[in-house]
Length: 364
Image (cartoon, rainbow, N blue to C red; front, side):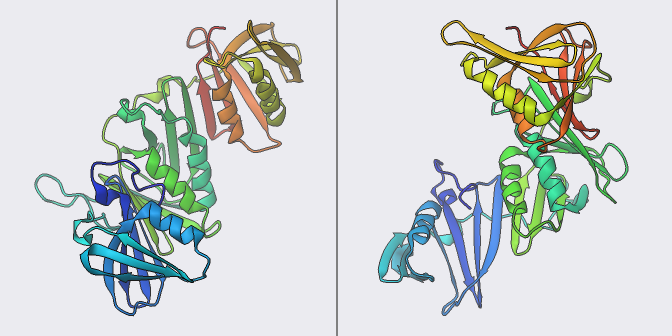
């Protein structure tokens, strides 16, 4: 719940979690009105009831608890007494009736004429595959909140039994496509970054089982076990990314991922602290990664590469390259594609036929 509740907000109830104790079960909910999470734990409810407590303070109490169990008892005036071992706490809560309602799986957004809109799409796939698709796109989402249509990951179905996710911040673009049997989707959707980040955490629980991600006109949700994560989709038009991805590359350079990653890390030590630029100099059979700073010094390292062509150099933001290489499999071989379709050229990094990462060059 900690990643969902708002630290600073104008609505105090959004900093609380809702605890709903029923016969043998405790349901816990949190929401920031855009992303919601609900899960269920076993408990001994001697007297069923509902309370809300500050999420972070409750977490700190439970984290530091010396006992194996914690007991909660509501008092007058929305106060709650917590006991764990020999420690005792009294917390102020808020009226649970003011806690906002959360969207439920199966509910569909209502249109202006109050008619229910049909479900747009539902994909069933391995948790590991969905986790990979999130890992290889989420880092490229724009951090600029004013660029609302770039603040999430775009999802569509480019063909039968195929799912594609795309993210861009205007300087680089990450695209992954995977086979998803039975999946088809009319139109597209933009899933918010915060919701996907929390969904990614949820995928780590329960092993590599099949999960179901559902999307409708305004909502996306995933249920795993007793936990349900829901989020509001981003409204707006995602830019036409297809014109940015080169159809073919003038040069194709095969290089070992681990060697390139290590070389860029070392060269970045002397890169400009503001622009983080590194230079890739290609020559017969090798690529030299270098950086220079008048104030700090310079670094250079050559690694083997399958390159046959006229020598040339091009500069890139080291952070952009490191983030992409960081989510690729260790000990793998990546293909660097340099295209002159967009002057002065773009770099396409490919790990397999279904993953492409496009980076705009920079002047060093």
